[in-house]
Image (cartoon, rainbow over all chains, first blue to last red; front, side):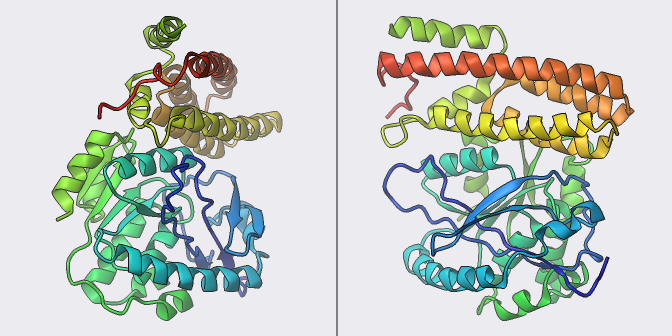
Length: 252
Length: 145
């Protein structure tokens, strides 16, 4: 396996079908970033094959067999996903970002990091009921890229995800907060160029509240969550009440 | 008609097919999202059909990659938990236990049962949603204004 060409991940998110209000819910198209797969390990070992549908602003759809985890079985599948798609995703994202900044400068920015589509649909609907919209990242790498691009007020982090799990991603985010740089993330395999090119202009000095969404198994115990830098946790299944309490505690 | 719908729903809970998480979803239904539960349910069955297919193929190959199987089942259990599919969730848990024990036969047996429960739930929910639509929007639980 050649190590010279890193696997490129591009992830977008199709607007979910539950939104039939006619209002535009801000759904962020996230760039998954490059991953040097020789460096990146998934501690959780959960790497299911899944086919994602992606849509960029120009209306083209890609489907790809995802997962870049360190195990070579999944390695080559995402590799050829196109340069052009990243460029179009980027430019579309600039517009979206500008639009997002205009609309949402006063509202709290919340990031949901979750790979399960049903969980995303349910969580978004609950948040909507609580009066909030959320950006979505599908794995830890996307989460890091999103946090690098924007200042979030709250992150809801699923623990078990492919590519980079929630525990590891949180450790890397805390390292960034402490050191002011993403060296640890780059060392772990997150794409350097994307991190450096898209850094948010003003970095918040406040600690980013990161709340784990955990299935509460041994691997995802509350102790594990705290040990990796999470502030709190929500046990799955996520309910309206749990989210409400979380917002009350961590959003001011 | 509406009473019939209510009775069907109640029996789904009483017989353990659904748990309180399903009610959480119903709370999210309102005028703006009148069919939310049905839409989530549709997404669940579409997504879980894919997972079942993946697991079927993996099992057919004969080589039991327990890590991979467990990984699929983790997803399956997650979705099932989110919509309140109680019996399916229980089978997922059992399957994962057999995976961890490296028990191939247990996995096969449980998977067979899981598919049955999944199929039963799908039919029951389809029937329920169909009747609920016919009965009119008043029947599905609404969030108190």
